[in-house]
Length: 117
Image (tube, rainbow, N blue to C red):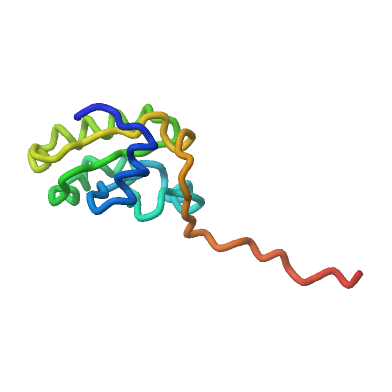
């Protein structure tokens, strides 16, 4: 692991040509509700089995709700032989510190028919 990265730096990189792979380690339901646009969901418990999916990345930023579990995820990814040449960082403060736009893959709830009065 190469340390932590601030949300503002992640936002700047995300808007540039050097955008890192952003790996959100929350469960799929939380990811569907809201996530950083263009991030990918690899739940923490699946990470050991799926870390090989990240071997083509030059830079990876892990994200969780508060920035604590993502440190562990970054350490796990960084210890994998296939990511030895990759810069791996955890986003400091997690999604609670992110002030950029969020995406959602969840459809709005159907509120049913309109009331007759």
